[in-house]
Figure: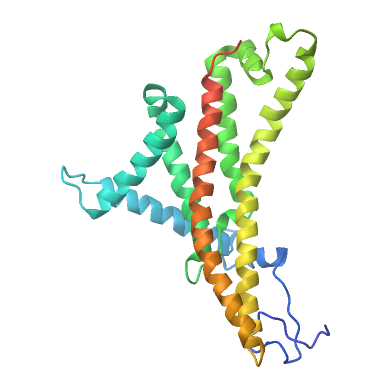
Length: 269
């Protein structure tokens, strides 16, 4: 395609009009800074993360600032969401007595991840913040630091290493290999997969949404209108599917976080 040809995301570009279709890729996830505050450049993803955080804080403050015995609509929704994570994730994984202290963290993680995912289907925003690897990596790092610190706090220095390495003298000759694999998994694989699982799903989902959305517009010309209609139907289906995946990925993220905490609190052999 020559330099003077328009791309698929330009408003005048359609099939049979002499312009080429450029599929979405990594470039679709890079944004120029919108403004600078105190030397810090804010791009679209940072702005969405900030707005989402403020929205979450406002929602829970409005829902629970003045709780009533007979809850209003906002309090009822807040209680339902809070109780779902508390009972369905934390209590199930850690038990009520042990898990109560971790409920605020897990609830916060769930709603933050969920809202960051939801930006993908919200008009004007239309971009999942968690499709940028730095955000899932930062969240996974928080869980990882908690996991490691709890492991040594609960089991002591020696017991902590036993916990992380899966030490069990009954394994005999294969013990060194098992310890190496367990350390590799617990210290490197866990935080990596925790972040990448969320990132990869949101990255792939947004790429597909972009592909079908751009294709719908690009095919909207002449005989291509028939194909454009099919592409539009796929776009609608992908939006519905993404709404499901966004909630599932937030749930999986906190479920894994709870499992890691449970592993840290378990006694070493």
